[in-house]
Image 1 (cartoon, rainbow, N blue to C red):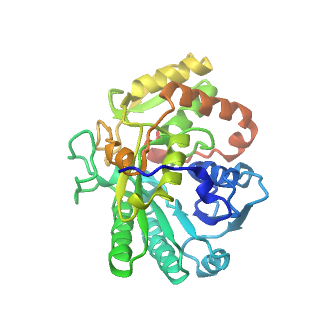
Image 2: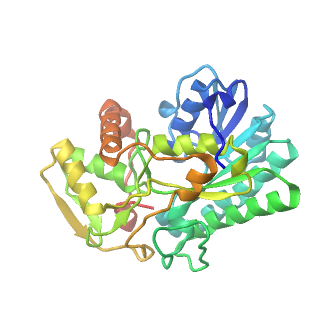
Image 3: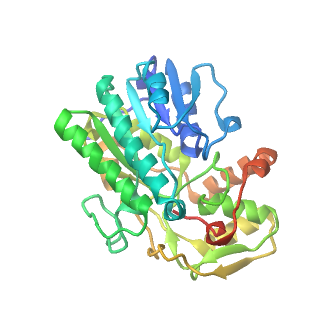
Length: 345
């Protein structure tokens, strides 16, 4: 039975959001602050986040630091957070292929430290941001359901995201720590800056606005389950509140497929880019031609229901780009070689 939910649950609470300067994190922190949280603490090393993107609200406190650094962790846990949303990660697939040691440090050791500090400091709940795009492997039947697992993974990022879930299971089963594992699918929306290791949508918007052809890895018939950041935030807020979620893992997705070639066409049309598309080689690790998640478990457990239609969400993202064009131009960075290709975790 699904519990009722009200964002008023967070009123007066102290909440820690690791990775809170990122795209999902900034939207989550804004929602928590507006819900009346007494204090929202952001811990972020700004490796993929930006201070200009952090909401300017009186009840949001930013601490620059890494989840692997004990000094930073002692600082934020000194504030006695009741709920921890662990979003910080070394993102994502190609980045982890290029820098596997950094990946295991942040996604492995960093997650372990967050769970340890949460346990030692009496945190009531930890919501772990997992990746449904990663941990199911390439052989999973569609739609992807939570009871299917694969040990045949393609990148260090996929491995460490599964590792994080396993650590959550251990701390829940052995110590009784209240953990929730939320599996994200292809998030997009306002707040996401383009870059060398970023997702496909912000990169497509960025290149389209520059009048460049959009690079498609593969045939364009590949699909992804693009999930609007506002829907993800709603799912996270529910995951941090509902008792049914404790000890569980569930997909947070749109439950719909979108072809990459259709995405490119929509973005080119929306910004008036006449350069079209170009086809480039698929990356070796990119073994999934389709992604589609079932959201039935999340709906049943926490009442999650994606509400934003893809075209509407895409236009919101494009509007955000236009409003923040100057900052985005300064922040966007694309290195040479394979890593400069389109990103879609």
